[in-house]
Length: 189
Image (tube, rainbow, N blue to C red; front, side):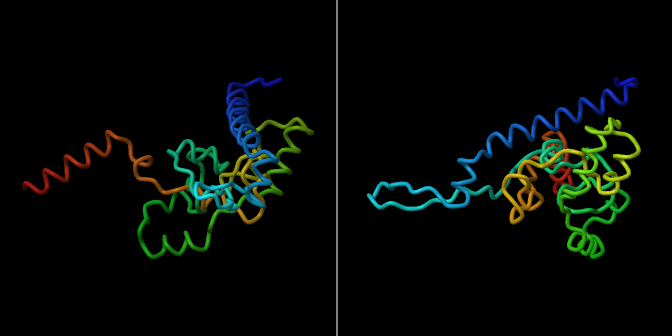
């Protein structure tokens, strides 16, 4: 029984995350994995048979979708889906210290901690946003959802590298329009 509103909201959020990765796990089925590993022989237009290997190079998405794909908390302690830069250090973006942090603290999925947190939730009946689960995952803004890409595509695949930095998705149209208007006014001044 989920007695508080916070627990119900945490459960619904967890179910949405689980659904997203269950759909991706369904799409990344055994047939796709076989083609991913061994390739698919296709007869091309010139009559020559060639082997093609399907790959996922980039995934372009806005921030809320990146949060879902990277299995991190929305606006958590470490909000970046690519590295473990903390929210308190976001004001130093673009400085040499920021570059060093992004290179040394690259985000990696914590499979062991996620599995342990899921054991707390599903076997011990502890709340999803309770202290036991948060103690394991909150420092890296991780969530108790098994990442479908990491689970199905293996150790050589990096979800963090797959997520493209796409300015069209990162900046809302209204913000861009305001910035563009401001830049034009600066040129006229």
